[in-house]
Length: 547
Image (cartoon, rainbow, N blue to C red; front, side, top):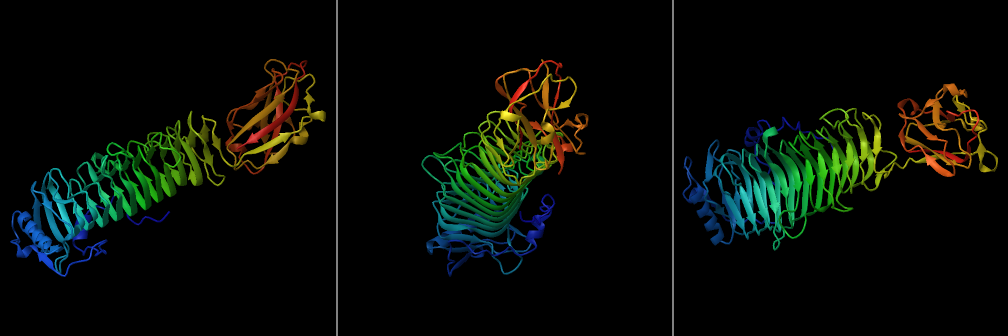
């Protein structure tokens, strides 16, 4: 994962003042060729100190539109901010950009008021806003810009503080928001992107965006992505101190969201989830930083989203109140999962796969002394595939918990033990005391157990039963001694089977291997105990399985 150079929570403090004091980056305007004619609001009645610049801005837009399009310029005036809004939305037509470019004084300041959208783009083509420093503390609702049925709309080079919302977008063919900084979003969303049954939104493109909510009390979701919207692309974006980072859902629109392509994406200290995926499929994120949910999992994936729900590469997922990831659909993961379960040591795992969910964990680790397990496969979970290179050691309880019986680690190994001439073995007059299985001294061998998490003993019981309570156990020592008394349980619980049944295959079930046994040279033996000195149990094949 790329190093993150922002200090995250502190990065936005004073950010508006810092950004206003320096020139806003002049990005290439996508899809827009500037007109040779500029239309300044200073020529349509605007003046420094006016209480409401709406009329002057609207007249300059009309002049530009009558000329076939162009740049409406609001010049920078030092510390003065042009006042706009006042529940009187300003419509921006096709071919018109409102531009805060100025030869002096830094970016143009706007001070917004009211509870309605300030600028509206309805059916507009190749239009937008760029180069403004916006103060929104006078807003009681609404947003900076509302786009309805537009195409090739750019909201570029914007620095803001205390906005209610930034952007509402519905049925938009292409919308770009680049090179911008937003501090202290107070309303329900930074960006709401949605469609309806008849109108689809196609592309929302975000690049170099840093934005913050108002901390633990935030009600704002950074990106609310609703139904009938396709292809969200995001690069180099930071979302800090929001209620939620990215909410993917289907409450409006004929189809669920589809196609997320993101790289270098950060969600830090959300009140709830960094990513909450309730609908959609084909979500791809590389270089993800999801950290510090105050009350929930960092990432939540709902049930019923299929085999292509979410793919994460190069991730850092840490510091959640609950689990790092909770998924009831399929997730592919490459990354580092740690320091989760802030609710309490051992309360939650690093990655929890719910009923109906599945996991392909292809690289990295999930380990931390706070997390109960690195991976948990709950009852009803599908395939949980964990690559051999994934490190799950060092969690509070064990590497993983396989309630569903579907975990595969890629490290599975079977140690087969030959059970005497002809493939069977009878233990004549099995004693009460712990004793090595007859003939099993030849099977005492050192094994490197460092890469294994669990073991189970599998025994093919033959026609002669042992005494009631007789047991056969897998034990170990590190000394290499063949004395039965020197072998101890290899698992955190006994890895053993009863010998008072006949003609069936029995197993111990998977048991976590004890930390003391996970060494480079653990000597493994089969030890029996609990016989009565009379009954003589018989065995077929015996094996120890490791994973």
